[in-house]
Length: 333
Ligand code: F1P
Image (tube, rainbow, N blue to C red; front, side, top):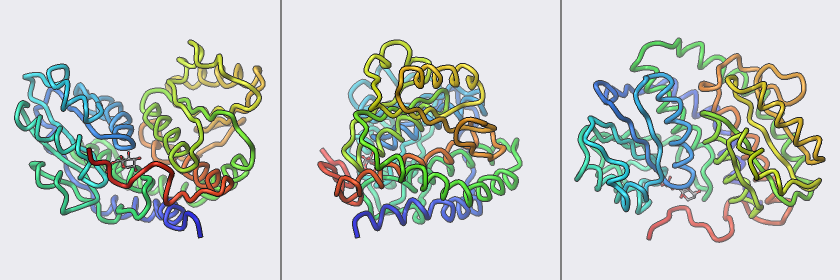
């Protein structure tokens, strides 16, 4: 059956998340740092975007995300002489640019080097000073689903565990309990939306949700070869909305900090006649996640919507989500 690995990996996420809560790492490397730079490629870069926003919010340390290629080819625009923690993110641990970037920062950078992967015998594992390996997040599919949310959650928990500022057991309880209803809710909504023809599918997100919006757009694009894009929510007014038609689907991933303005953007989109789905917390008109978690802690809960949408759209188009067109599981140049 088409997509059997992908659907299984999507639905295994809460189980892997539970295991990560049971084995939460410490990330002592953040101590005494003036900069934290997360780097990865594709999905792993989008993970870095959300994680950098979360990290600066909780640690007050300047935190940035960049595509691995920028560290390799434009290292002078990224590396400073400040004490820095470099974190390489890679499901396979074999993406050429990520391995090259880790080499580069070790050669040029000051500070510490951490890696996270699902592949314990990878080249990245060999290059990092310390590597967090999440074998339970290993995937058969080309596209990243549980590996994305698991590596994101693991690094979030590692930072919270090191700071000792959050009650991780209540975080775990809320995340796992809400997943029981949320996954079926997203599955039903996404499978119904997937039956419609959309000219374009756009995801909007602010703050830590911009990385989630980018990853959501990539998931649907990769699995179903659909035209998708992602923007910061209010940025959508500054030009990108020009392409909206009745065949457009726009998904607004609501934050807490900009919620009121983001809802106005959604209303403007509906006024133009495009379909608009709003996903957030404490919502009357939209999909209410009902986690009781803030915009930084509930990040992984937004992902099943786009993962299911990509899966069902691929099936509708007669494609196999496990083997997306033009893609390989590991990108080596
Ligand atoms: C990540 C990546 C994904 C892409 C596809 C192939 O590589 O390039 O971004 O969507 O799944 O793998 P990595 O995390 O293994 O470095």
